[in-house]
Image (cartoon, rainbow, N blue to C red; front, side, top):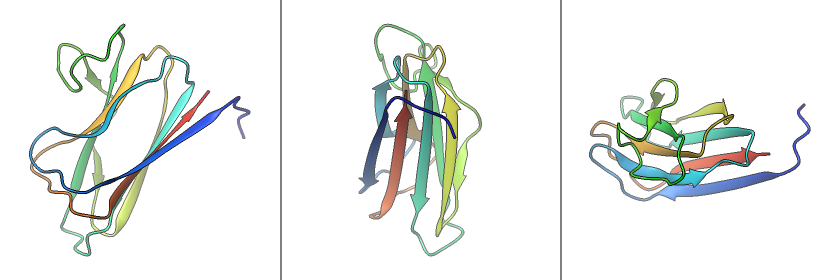
Length: 121
């Protein structure tokens, strides 16, 4: 188990988000963090209801526009969460200034879709 000096947990619920590139986790300053963990939960009873989430990172002095290709780069693959399941993703933040997450595609989030972001320094 790693020995981190601090940990900050941010949680939230997505009430309604639909369409392409809907912000789920806003641009967050991670210049003083060592590691991030994300968890997304899809409560929909249908396994066919799939949420697709993209986590982005940026190296820069300001956050800019989350997801803009000239400023942000997707970290890893799409996070695909089918109904009644959750997904966990952990990343090292070495060198990153900001991170954020968007809903991609035309997925519609209803009440009960939750997310957590753990920042460790």
